[in-house]
Amino acid sequence: MISPFLVTYAAYIMLYGHLSPGGGFQGGVILAVAVILLITAHGYKKVRKRFKFNWASLIESSAGAMLVLLGIAGIAFGAFYSNFLPTEGGIIPSFNVIVGLEVGAAFTFVFYILLRWVESD
Image 1 (cartoon, helix red, strand yellow):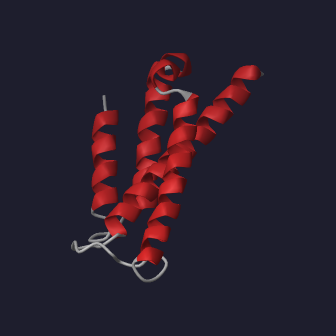
Image 2 (cartoon, one colour; image 1 turned 60 degrees about the vertical axis):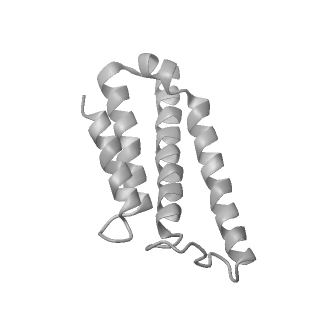
Image 3 (tube, one colour; image 1 turned 45 degrees about the horizontal axis):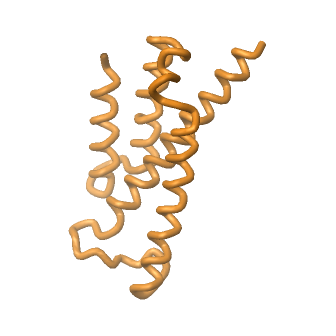
């Protein structure tokens, strides 16, 4: 019941991390905690049907690729991770969201691996 609120709070922390304390890492940890709470409350097997192990791996890999593309786009506009967006925070909100997805997927991925290891015992 609390997981949707945690996901919303994680999105807020990621999007407004350049204006207030927080950012991608903190938002990603909160995002992973939302999934971990679902697993704790409903059980690994039930949650695994909707949030597959491969999804966490795919999101983590995609976020890493997006970080590289953001850096390459910065090079195209002047310097590595150069600020090329005319918005208030520039590329920082985009960077925070991508880092948040990377961290959230990585922590969820590690939790899934630990659950598989415990389940095999």
